[in-house]
Length: 294
Image (cartoon, rainbow, N blue to C red; front, top):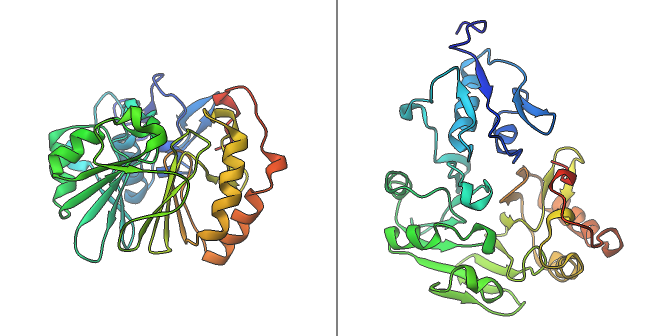
């Protein structure tokens, strides 16, 4: 590739909303500059080129361009395997503020979708090619867009907590209360009110933690982080939820809706979850997207 050719250069246009997705997928190539993502270095290897294509196909505003061209569909890497039993859906939706979504493989051969990518029949066909998808699990109301469409396309059950039922009133499975609920063998829903009234953490096989927007991995802090500045329901409720839930969960993969993913030993995550329950550090503040520490 000729890095000096405008037709061949990668760039991010001004539609970028600073959602961090591109920086997760192409670290070192895409960075935050003046409050949005920017390509800070052109790719030098095939692997780096592929990372930028992944970022382009994940971007919810389609802001990542290869010169003047849209990326060719044949270069779409999604669904992208992250771990033995998890694929990243990519194709993040503008109707979920660009949230990540995932496919979880089960020992029976079926899959579960956690939150939803943008809707298209062609994408649904790609995801279904991995196996029968039996459940669509919504972590909270902000990520409920397209849930019914995907569930109907797959013939799957749609799940949401009763606290956020208004976002998916036709859900097939309604999660009540604040105690853990087993959805399927090895898959436990832990209600976690705070970010929204009906936020849920889904834990699979004591290995994979799908945390929605309740907490994430911050590269800036090198630690678990809670997005106090965009907690819609109650940060004090979220602090209480974390204190209630932290001793009950063990996992090796943190897979949030917004913010970065991380793999660590289960004991290390347990220590960090314990530290995250220090309620004195979580206090109400005005909504401020710019305060997020990605």
